[in-house]
Length: 222
Image 1: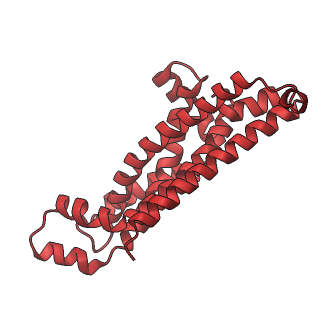
Image 2: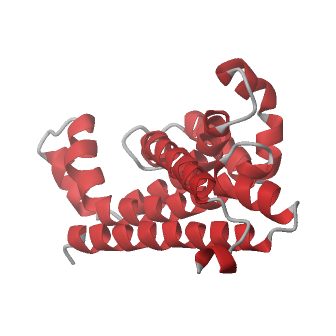
């Protein structure tokens, strides 16, 4: 039945492409979570009225975040070709997409982290300061725990964006479902291949959103 409806679909290739997309998304989400939290904390802590208030550092970090957040992803991939080749040795394959995916997503998530941290009750932060808590303690025991639902919600949105980024990266040879949909589907006029790849991307997005919603609700104490 499936062979009749989808005559051009090679399921072994579909599963390989799905694995590549999941691999690219997973690695880049982990790296984005780590880098985004660091950048977001720097943006928050060095802003006016906060623990590490420093206009110069804040301006530099904000500038870097704004620049990389504003560059369209497909252009970012092209701009990073020399860096990617030096780092990975090639521009083809799933690993070659990771630098652009991480550099494209981390600044986006950093702003979400900053917004989440600004929503933390300043009274709680001041209370921790008055009890002599160190900055590291305030970060680990107050800021991150209090903002955790928003941080999880933010990384969920970022992960969904990264699935879309992997599809775009696939167009320039990074592999995954985007590569399959474009090269084996669109360019060869095989609409059934494009359809299956698109459906699988949508399923991945729904799964990420579902998991993110469950974790956010579990963490939200309000």
